[in-house]
Image (tube, rainbow over all chains, first blue to last red; front, side, top):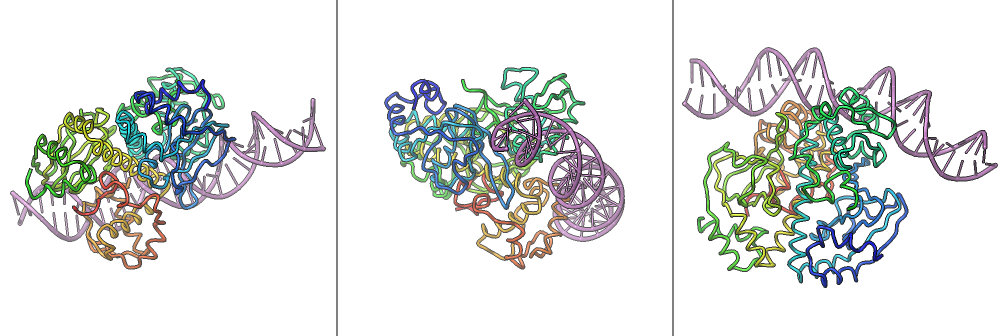
Length: 246
Length: 246
DNA sequence: CGGCCACTTGAATCTAATCAAGACGCGTGG
DNA sequence: CCACGCGTCTTGATTAGATTCAAGTGGCCG
């Protein structure tokens, strides 16, 4: 692991409050690995031997069934992922692949378990993290069940704008087809729905979104802190794109 | 709390492995309450003051947005619920109401926190429970994103049959409109889809489902241990209807 | 017996998926 | 440097899946 990354990792919700010996001990057993883009890190069904920590790049969690594929989350540094599978010691429910060249810390699940048993602060952090991840998935399920594709898209655009600091304009941080899958629609539908939202306060310029009338878009999205409030909770698997690192 | 229920509660995943003093201490601070059917226990957005444990009856977790409502889970005894909100000390993301007359144990969140800090075994159990709940929601999200309504229904029928011990015939444990909402469809759609599945190995007799050709139905459902495997994981919020009490 | 509610069924509508074709951008290799 | 080829994105036409609106049935409870 590189020294310049250490503070960022130390600052993860998972490690922020643990004792320094615990943290150093864990770091001693992890090793860092670099992956090219589009590489399958693991497949759903695999056995979880490592807690993963994304240090650099971007990783997509997706799920497959019967030939269909759905993006479940996109992660940006610094985030840990697949904590729940490690804790349960049960097969991954999702597959992971890099979207860009990425550096990932691999923390052996065995050592994680040992450290949790030794350090109650770490145990507490794990609980908080898992509770946040759970609530993130509840939000996602609510989003899927209660909103139409159009509403989900409008809400996502507003959330993304907010994540970048309430900017009125931003470029999509992932390919549109990935965003489409994340939002539970086809690329064609996303394209059409984006076009339709031009009547609801946005303008388009290729991959750039310009929020022309935030109030109008907000009305179309029906924002709700009990669905959309990213940021307050777990930054890991909850959002399509958690805030930029740090 | 009634003495005859104690063993069942003691046997909850959450409490099974904790020290007896911890358990007794927790039980001392909880109080039991009885509720009539159709009563709103709490609403989404409320502050979580108690961990709830359903001892008798049935409880439905549902979410509302913009006038729409979706059933997220139905709980049967003995199950704890809303652990995650208690751990995070953040507002409920779902509302809860009784479906039948129900008895519920209310465990003050404050005492739960204290006990977790004192007993590492309890902390470990909470982690396992939360990880399981998270994975249950991941399953639900996969179910929603990857399967059609028809496939979800077929899979649910098979899972329900399995939960009751691989019986070839069973009566629906909840009203059809609730099942419909849980599966993400309207009551009319459920009715039609159920009718359509008569060509896929089931027969209908009012609220009773008869699985005539399990192989055929299984093919229509496309069962997958990474979506449908109830039972192995958290029995709380994961399934429409976790196994019968005990 | 009457009224309410869940459920079913039918018809029309709507949303989103599918199939198909063309435009554009981008990187590679000639 | 340009030309080619690939993959993404867009747009159009059509289809499929599911919702909505409406009417009718049956059961249950007062």
